[in-house]
Every structure is written in C-alpha cells, then in structure tokens.
Image (cartoon, rainbow, N blue to C red; front, side, top):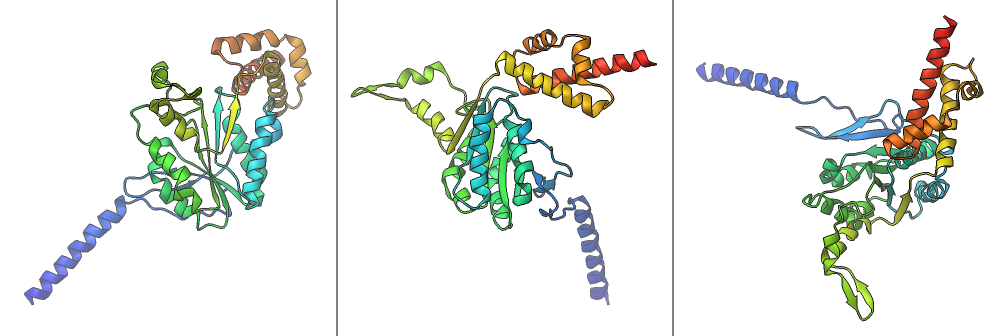
Amino acid sequence: MNTTTDETVEKSLMQQVLGRILRILPVTQSIDWQVSNAAVWQRGRWQSDFVSFPETQTQVLDDLLHIDAQKESLQLNTAQFVAGLPANNALLWGARGAGKSSLIHGLLHEYSDQGLRLVELRKDELQELSEIVARLSAEPYRFIVFCDDLSFEEDDASYKILKSALEGSVFKGAANVIFYATSNRRHLLPERASDNSKSGLVNGELHHGEAVEEKISLSDRFGLWLSFYPFRQEAYLDMVEVWVSRLVEESDPSQSSNDIFQREGFRQEALRWALARGVRSGRTASHFARHWVGQKLLGTSSLDE
C-alpha cells in the first residue's frame, strides 16, 4: 500500500514539474509560407524559430529611382533564382540610404507570387545559419536569406561562419536558398592603412599582405557585388519631388502637390535638409518630404479652420 502511495505522489510531482516547464516554454506555431511572404529568425532561450511578418513592406521596384543599373543586375539574378536556374549570393554595399534594403524588399513584392519568400536575420544569428538553411531547404519555395547592415569588427570571429557557409556545403546543399546582404563596407571588415604595410611587388605583380587577403576573402565569397553611391543634387531633388507628390496624394487627395510646390519653393529647403545630415539619398528625400508635406498640410488645415 505504501509503495502504491509513493508512486502516486511521485507521479503527481512529476506532472506538476512538467506543467511548470511547459508554462515557461514558448508556444510556437509552424509558419505557413503560403500565407506569409516574409519572416524573421528569432533566437529564443530554449529554441529558435521563424516569426512571420503579418504585413510586409510594399516597396515597388519602379519607385526606386536613379539606381537602374543595380536594380537591373539584382533583378536579373533574382529572376534566375526564382526560375530554378544558377544564381549568385549578392552583396549590396555603399552609401547609407541609397536604396539597398528597399531594393531587396522590392524584389519580394515583384516575385512573391512566383514563390519567392524572404527571411531576415541579424548578424548575431549567423551561427544558426546551418539550421535555418536546412529547414528552408525542405520547403517548396525559393528563399532569400537577408542580413541587413552587415559588418564585422576585427575581433569578431563570427564572420568566419558566414565565409564558410557561403563557400561550403550550407548553401550548396540547398538550391532553393540564396543569401543577400547589405553593408556600408565593401569588404564587411574595417580596413586600416597599416594593413597595406605587408603588401609588395613580386615580379612586377602586387601581392597583398595576409591582413588584406583575410578581409577581402569574405566579400569575395559573394558572386555578385553591387555598389551604391551618394546621389547627385538633381537626382536627390527628383526623389524629393516624387515623395512629396506621393505623400500629398496619400494624406489629402483634395490637395495638389503642384500647389504645395508653388506656395513656397522646396528645393533650397531640401538641400539644406540634406546638408545637415551629410548625405543626399532616397532616405533623406523621404524624411524631408514627410517634414515638408506634413508642415504644409497642417498649415493649410489650420488656415481652413
């Protein structure tokens, strides 16, 4: 009798412990890629998983101005990938706010109905890249694994994980997964003048030192390099005008963007805005347009009252 009682008590305690463990574990649901076009990879204390974006950024490729060459090249590479043809991992590097991330989101908008999906992950999640790719390889979709604003410090060894994955068996073993990254750095690692101290000429040929070779070796793993530069003044003002027209239409269809332009010149204000931020870019144009349109429409609304 005592034995039975002890077993009952032990079983009850085990059920209580199990119940407490289950309460602290996150409740996860398998993502439905038929419904979700994009997701982020979220690291958890107990487990990591895909978390769906309920609404993705509706960036249209035609809205991205003055990056035609970069857009054409990456769109062609993505079209090859979506069609199941050979394609390259891509590194988009250069000036901040020049449209690198927007271009990738625009590709998702363009090809999602053809089975393209996007998974975004942070740099500190690269160590789980093998698991991510392995899980995606079993899905009947084509995936861009996207790492935005990617860069490494000299003492950060995690770049070796990415270098190994790009040239090793991780991506080669998954024909439906490709890696796109954006960065302000061409080689993803800080470059010092001292790195060139070991470089020299051998039989008339320039040979880089080991430090330079190591830093180049990561970006060299990307088959496609696309460079982005600050926009010229007229290109920047062109983007400001497009953003102003769009925001006026969205905020107050009864207004005309031409009326706003005529009430007060925007060009000098837009240039001063860019000068204060140190860059002429699509992002700067968008920020100025929001400031300008909001200010003008608020003033018009106040006058009407």
